Length: 111
Image 1 (tube, rainbow, N blue to C red):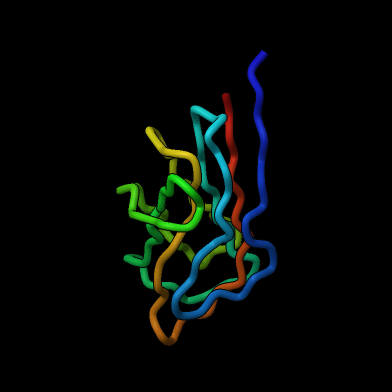
Image 2 (cartoon, rainbow, N blue to C red; image 1 turned 180 degrees about the vertical axis):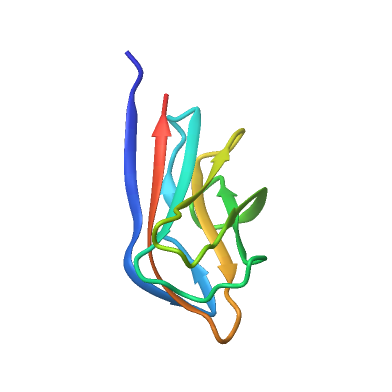
C-alpha cells in the first residue's frame, strides 16, 4: 500500500514582497505536488510565479527549476508537480510591490 501525506506550509498568511514557505522534509517521498489557493480575491499579474527550491539539509537552498503560478482567484487553485527532488522542499519568490494575497499552501507527498 502506498503512503501519502499532505502538509500545510502556509495557512491564512498575507503575502507581500519576498515570500518563502516553511521548509518540509520529503526524502521518503517519490512524488510531490504543491497547491496554492488564494483565500480572498487579489489583483495578481499573470506572470507572477514562485520557484520550487530544494535543499540537502533544510538550510542551504537552490532553485529546482519547477515554478508555481500565483493566481488571485480563490476559485482557481494552482499546482505544480515536482520530480527528482532531494531531502527538503519549499517555495520562494517575490510578489510585485503593489500586490498582497492571502493564501493557503499545501504540499502533497506520495511514496
